[in-house]
Length: 161
Image 1 (cartoon, rainbow, N blue to C red):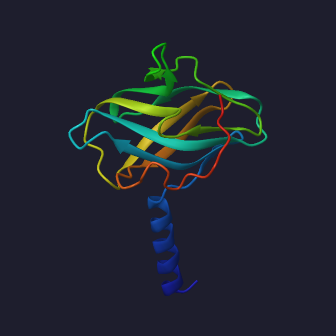
Image 2: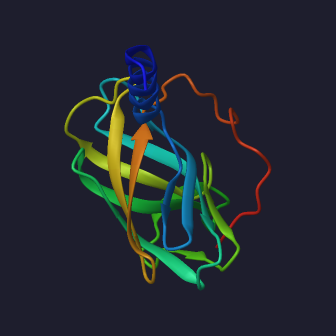
Image 3: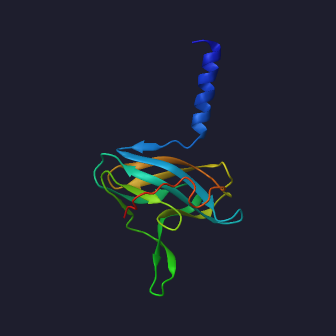
């Protein structure tokens, strides 16, 4: 391999390592991940992504961890008795059926960060550990995208439990 080819391969590898690539583990595929802070001065934020279960057994996303915040939780929105949508912690996690998906999106299921240690800045990468009942831990690098609009990049997906 020539010196020029080696440089091109190294540069390509460096660029690919900076982009959000799908994460795979035990039939689990995570893609279209991004995170946002509520505001630059906020101590909370959220992350969104699509999680597919390809050929794995029925599973459940039961926990999420990251060192960027004091606490990270699985959340969703539910309507209360007065018709008001409330964000709530989903302690039992989200079901992920075989050949199914969980769509984490604004206004639905999502990951919440509480006690953010440093402001989320556009382009930062947030390391996350998704914990599944059967697939175990899946490491995901989530880019901070403060410019994405609510429907940007989202396709029509079936909503998992």
